Length: 194
Image (tube, rainbow, N blue to C red; front, side):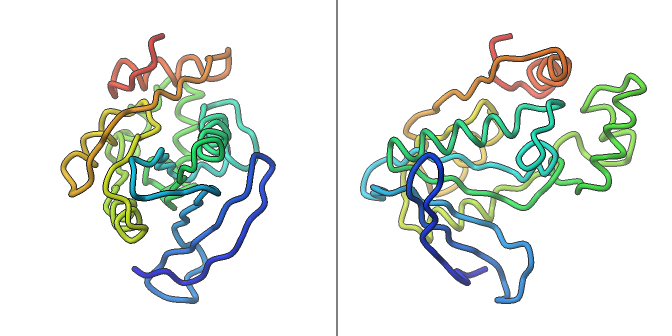
């Protein structure tokens, strides 16, 4: 995987540089690094490793908290010279089509974890090696990880990177996603304080 292209992106919350990472220059869905103005890799950098969620990030689905987490992370990054890594691993790594099938199972009473395993997948099949590579390529050695997920913290602690701090990113639940968030807390160990 290499840097394939980059450009300045003025966003609603601030100015960023977007860098696309892929094995090939014609990759239609590269991983993305979004670097805020003021980015300084010589000190611990606020970093969000965000896995793609088309339903939440793009279409504003209220079944999850992903879009809200992405928006809040971009604000933190803009304010503090941080980075958002956008990994193309939809649906905790099972892809959009299987994620929609999992949603149908959830509508029948399965929780988000059981729906994935019923379809033959791990509860969470995401990998973070690409994010670690991107962070190292950016010259980052220490992060303040913007997450509620202890698995992300552990993945980075097992890497050459230093996790200097964890920045909680708790989004208030509502009727459409409360069960989803409770499952994330109870079965996956997410630090949500519900």
